[in-house]
Length: 104
Image 1 (cartoon, rainbow, N blue to C red):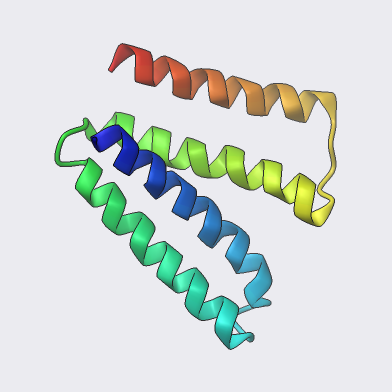
Image 2 (cartoon, rainbow, N blue to C red):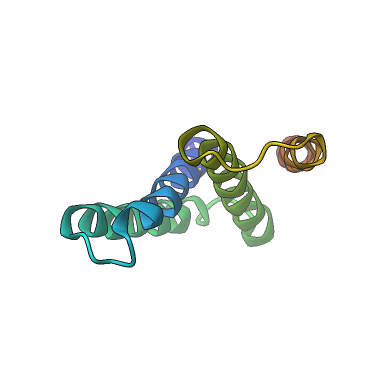
C-alpha cells in the first residue's frame, strides 16, 4: 500500500508542477487554487508513504515521478523541445526509479 500511496503522491506532484504553468504567476484564481490543492495532497500522501518507506527512497521516487511526468507533459502540452538526448535522460530517470523499487 505505501507504494501505491507514493505513486499517487508523485502523480499529484506532476499535477501541481504543470498547474504552476497555468496559474500564470498565481494571477489566475482557479488554477492557483487547484495547484495549491495538488501540492497539499502530494505532500500529505508523501508523508503517509514515509511511515513505511525509507525517506531517501521515497523522496527520490516522488521527485522522479514528478520530473519524468512533468517533462513528458511539457513536451505534449507546451511543445517543449524533444531531442534524443533528452529522451535518453528521461529514460535513465525511469530506469533509476525502477531500480530503487527493485532494491527496496
